[in-house]
Image 1 (cartoon, one colour):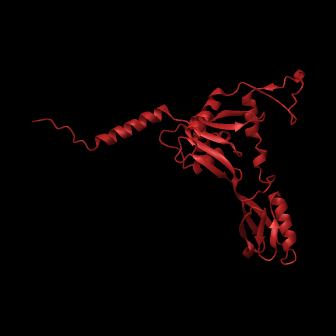
Image 2: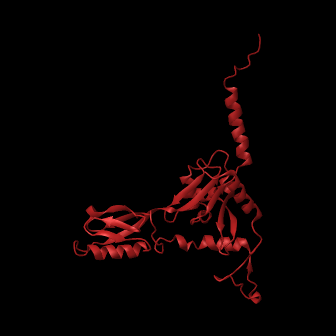
Length: 246
């Protein structure tokens, strides 16, 4: 669970919503001023949300501790779930150790096809990244279990909230906030209506998260009133009802 200090920092970052950010190249040199390379933080974060290429499984580079599902199309008895060892390798029947670190799922599948081609006719190997414990998304605020959670491929904001046990009675999912280091390299936030996303009316409000994202669910004033009524009624239950004296 995040510390109160860290939570306050995140909320302050979101409340501030940096007015703008200067686009810079990888060497840190500023772009020519004639191009007016000053863009709003909202544009930067929107671009990052719209293009989460870093989380595209086809381009993902396997890391130690990743959990892989390995399937053989014509030989399902060889199907396997493997955890990538700290040295970056996996151990499989017949072929032994195979280097997985740094390979994409497609590249590893090709390596396994080649390795098993001497033992199996048309192995047809596919590799899927089931879980990436080294890559974390953070969920905080009015959820059942705030904290850091291992990402699954193409995990969305709603799925991240589900990993945290869902929202509480005090939550306002219509005012959720996604905090991300934007395309300009600056932490910024954008409002998400996760209630509409959950109902299916606004699927664009449920973006794919990337490592380091923070999904924050704020408190709802209306929900606070409802919760107060629930607690108030509960407190009254042990009390004997008032009976007028006849």
